[in-house]
Length: 314
Image (tube, rainbow, N blue to C red):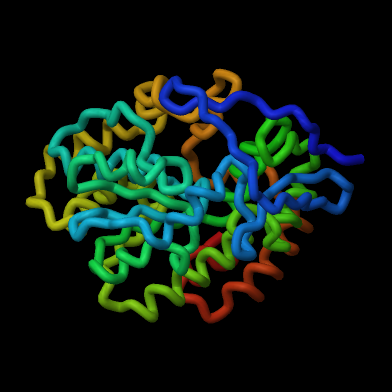
């Protein structure tokens, strides 16, 4: 049975309807083992959500960065919204919630981003090899978010499950979705490819200053995480401000403060879920865990990121 229904809900960003444009997209259906499907569009060999317009994806490589721009990147569900908020507060010097959605290359027209005051925080989920050429040319600071892939797939499943998304209303089981994730037929061709691509990029461009914002470390010690961000940005350390930002960016507070400017589907804020570590334990059984680590150890062996989320850690 095909679980991808045709109905698509209405997306709004900051209270304004987001207009879809599926023209020129090469749409493909990805089917799980039980026949349930998700719909993506292929752009230069990579799976993207159909809400990402071809016209915007085509402009990412040539996007005009500024020398003081911060490029914030990472796989979906790895904490980019959270990190955007912390970074914005640090740059503004006050623990006030940003009353706009994050500045996203896949969703925001370049002309709109060009109007933003410097320093900008330019966000994207595309692989580093597909980032703007100016990131390298101008040696922009890069913040790359990391999170346990097991929590990522659990969170991504809840984003898709039984919701009328542009990728279809997915009604498959978590186990079926997990195998799509492991087969790398989901967003950006999967997280493992996304990480290996980033690793190759940073190896080829050691001159690029990069800070890895690790989700689990941020949960464990949010004040220290904000302090590390502040140091990376080259700001004068203000520990009082860092503590205030950490408190303001508490998940429940941030979710409430961002309510009016978040992405919503049919009026529901669906991107902010739990903001926790280890939720994967509620989803994986022993066989799924074995299947997961078999692929993880194959795909990530020899990677600089391998030990961060190796089997021995858990």
